[in-house]
Amino acid sequence: MAPFVINQEILTSGAFSPFYLAVGDFQATAIYSDPDIQNELVKDLRSSTDIPVFDHQDGLYMRLTVENNIAFFHKWFGCREPLSEILVRFELQHDAKKPLHKCSESEIRRVCYAKYYMSGVPAAVFCEPIHGADIKTIHTFVRMLQTMKEQAAAVLILVSNLEHALLVGDVVYKLQPGGIKPVETEEDAAPPEPESAAAPAFAKLFKISAKVDEKMILFDPPEIDYIESQDGKAMIVINNEKYAMDATMLEIEKKLEAYGFYRCHRSYIVNLQKVREIITWSKNAYSLRIDNKIQSTIPLSRTKIQDIQEKFNLE
Image 1: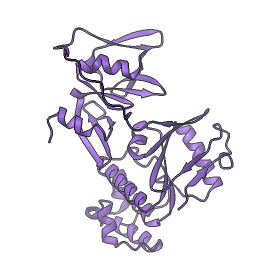
Image 2: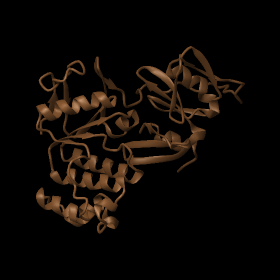
Image 3: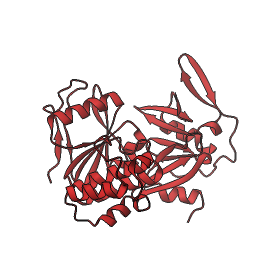
Image 4: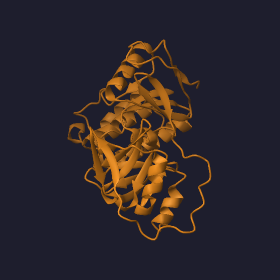
């Protein structure tokens, strides 16, 4: 189908500057913004378009079982895929007889996904589809998204988390009151610089500085989880606490390389000692799970997967 368009006729709330965005088929477009802006955009889309906005709030039948919910919507939408395959596709086969009100939030989320998938819509907007979901549920959404793209659906995904935007979006934008701008999702194609013949044998005493209000705080590299580029600024992240740095990502990458840090994505530099797991969402989508209190996940560029496997001596 032809892509659907977001333009000045749709954007009537005045919460942000008007913009033009064509959401193409065969791909997922993600818009990253704060929750208030996201809510205003959802209002505009619902009032000015016929494109369904899926936000987990539309009705399921909590007293019915998982299977009965799926069966109802399977018949309602005239879905041709067998009911048993839908249950397996959304990892619900083991919960089929469970009443929905006894299911976990992630299980209910997967029932929502199944409903959206069976609707067969050619264009859709998903609002925070994986926020708060467990690993199994995120995998399920990524697989569903891939199938929808193969079926030429035009998909827009609204999130308030950059990592989620980079995970689910083939094209990613950041929306702010002043307008919209693209977020780069892949590394530069330029070849890497040749390694120095005399690499440092060990690192000298070194601390990374960050500014908080009028104070300058010094961090030991081992306590840093990762560095994130946010609105053109480098941010130290430690257990989801962020501290602004006065340096570019390239400068930080060079300084921290000797301390076991690695540029895993254009927007992220990770402390390899903190990496607990390499997650494969699909053949083109990967994340690193960090061993910290909140078990953070950050994007891993598909161009880096082989390199990082070699660093960990993985086959």
